[in-house]
Amino acid sequence: MIRTVRAAGFAVAAFVAGAAALGGGPLRAWQGEAAPAVHYLDHAAAGVEVSDLGLNDDSAPADAERTARIGAFAEHLVALADASLPRPRTLPELVDAYAGAATDDREQDCLAAAVYFEARGEPIEGQLAVAEVVLNRVASGRYPATVCAVVTQPWQFSFVNRTRSIPPANRASQSWRRAVAVARIAEAGASRLLPRDVLWYHADYVAPGWGRRLARNAKIGLHIFYS
Image (cartoon, rainbow, N blue to C red):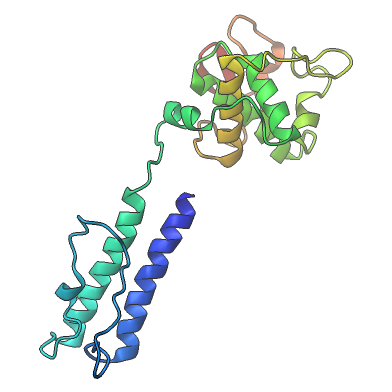
């Protein structure tokens, strides 16, 4: 949606600039009749009027100044398109925007399950970090090439049972809705916490031997992350 409206703003701006370039001089109304009205934006507080650009005016300023005014008008149109859309910025705002009970596909479902079972009691940053570890493994070439295969790989995630199946989550809970949001954010790369070489983590109340052989990267909530 954001890209669509921005694209519309750019398209209108390009039309205005292109029309000026093709004219080579002041744009004139049709001979013998009034020019048809063209409304680019129905915005009472637009702040820039077409008449301010020197159009249909024999005493228009020199080309350089007129081009500068048209450029400013084009930038104004794009700014209006941007300002008219609420865009979440912080991680909690992103979670609120992307939360939901239904996942988009099986891969996202597996990622949300990993977040839900491994970190639903953790802060949002800790949940996102777990999702990033899963996606880092998928991209690493050292682990299976799909999210579901990474999550159900034997002896990797404690919530996966010996049959390599993911237990059912409480999909009516707020924890699940938040896990879905975190999975979507991680997949889209809308917020990033860990480097892409961080492939391992464990809870801070255990001390596995492999942790001593790795580079500690961060501690988020109860989890320590390694590359």
